[in-house]
Length: 189
Image 1 (cartoon, rainbow, N blue to C red):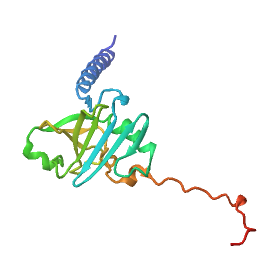
Image 2 (cartoon, one colour):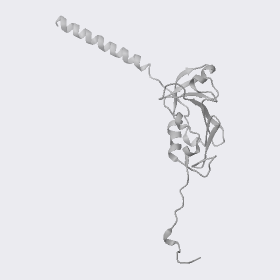
Image 3 (tube, rainbow, N blue to C red):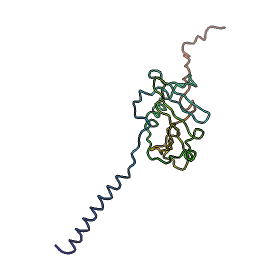
Image 4 (cartoon, helix red, strand yellow):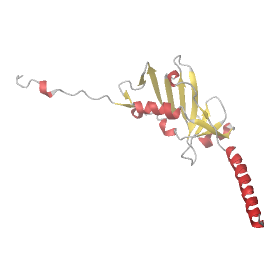
């Protein structure tokens, strides 16, 4: 074997070793989050969203969801699906603060954030979180368990889904159609 071939093999071996070292170091950098709700969706019977002085309550009776503040509205099923598919599956990724004095920086105080609570069939709280959207990060939110000091960054931006407007969650029922063919227009009044 010539000297240049030995050098090339040695350099190749060093590159392979560096590759595996780098790969192992990168594996340690992946962020594993914990979901805010790890139970079954069938366990949830009520949602409460509080945004400042506005609030919205969604309740389930059997398989039908209703808006407590506007029982005449028909629920938009796609909005309920988003609650289950995105909001309840959001993950707490990275802890950003343990200091309650920093809560306003992340918008997770009672006055700045949006409180999201969900309950079981016995009206017992399964989870209650305050979501904040302060800062320049539009891909993530901040979250704090209502009973804890730790503030986490979330893996997804779901802040806009926590809307306390009844028209965001429901729509007016369709107006009944008048059957014009069966109207008697021959009789005079």
